[in-house]
Length: 206
Ligand code: ZN
Image 1 (cartoon, rainbow, N blue to C red):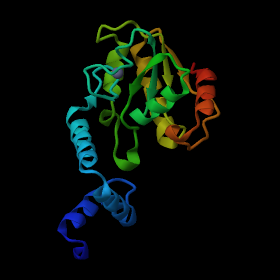
Image 2 (cartoon, helix red, strand yellow):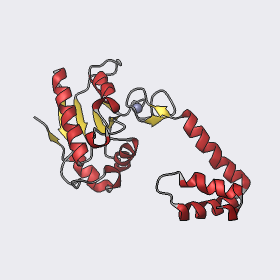
Image 3 (cartoon, helix red, strand yellow):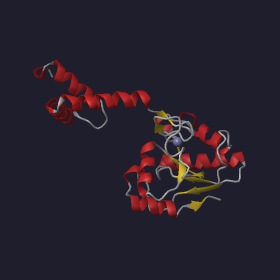
Image 4 (cartoon, rainbow, N blue to C red):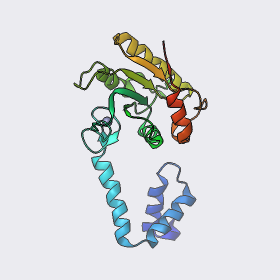
């Protein structure tokens, strides 16, 4: 990429390291950035560094946040006795967009996937079990809604979680989001109405 000069070449290369950005998009973005006012570019650069340095996992639900507790865990308006288990923070955002859920979350930060070498200890399951046993002093949990994706990995992770909770022998109702979420579908790409319907129609796992 020498014909661009080294600064542009380096910018294009850096942008290309992002997921879903190929050479053409990277070039388009690079030339767009070069045409932007300097202050705006600096503000983007600062927010990238700030996010990377300050964002970490919420000490209770394990979603990405910049405080000790995320805004949902620290809200007095949320029902802390209902926990919805989701795969990642993007799925949490998808359920929040429905506006129809008042409980709190637990974000696994992944799913169990033997194919890609992700085992139960690689996702935030231990933290969920600690929460259920009330180890962090929060109010007792009455319902756990398992909202992992209806993919092979999502289903087997759901089954594994059910097994673990049963082993704790707690008076906790375990439910699974209902039909409406297409089999094999990713939660974050499903529209709000379908998600809300899936949540409302959840069934108890006996
Ligand atoms: Zn939280």
